[in-house]
Length: 290
Image 1 (cartoon, rainbow, N blue to C red):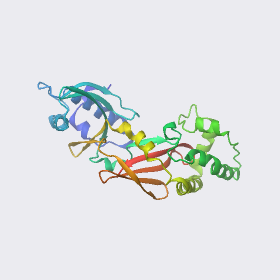
Image 2: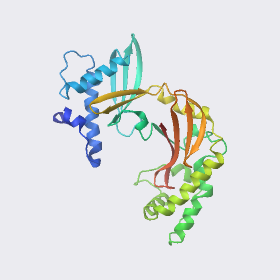
Image 3: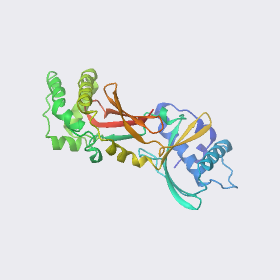
């Protein structure tokens, strides 16, 4: 729980140093929770700064939120920071809210969603073969061969074992194979990157156009009740994801990104990347709106 003395306007708008971002964001989220809980509370005197509270209240009212009945603060590394239940014309609705500081447009976000290539819901998104299997069968050996030239010998695990462990980020429980792979990626970043970049480029060149848009649409449905609460230069913005719908595949960009057209002249980009060390842990599709 945030100390009450930290609940103030200056701490909300403060741009902190990188190593203090987590603490600062927690303070902001505590303040937002207070604002949500006191929405339309006439007697509420916000210590966090009346302009912050008033700005947020005006924004919520403009987005047809008549009354907030429940606030869940989730935070952390989850997909949403808040889940709020609210009334509109006496009908209860749910909105998942993700808060982003110092941003006023979702186009400025690095991603709106990230999905592991191992996610079963994406199993047939690329119809011929998943990327992690393609990488395992065609490019993991190249990294192991390179490590062998440095007298680092790693036995390639069975595919079923590999795919069951490839998303484990926890150093305490990480399998030895992935631990050694990751440790040496830091030493030989350039060599790893060259192999991994080639694997992604070759995979998309071979299979990228054979994507199933319906599977992608199904995986993005979870964004329909989601909104991004954005704050920049003392002003809040709320962008709802439900209006953006995928229409068609457009192109492959930069040898690592699938681009899709939408109904509202935006683009949805899916960049194929590794979350924790190129070629080591967590191959995923990073999805953003541009």
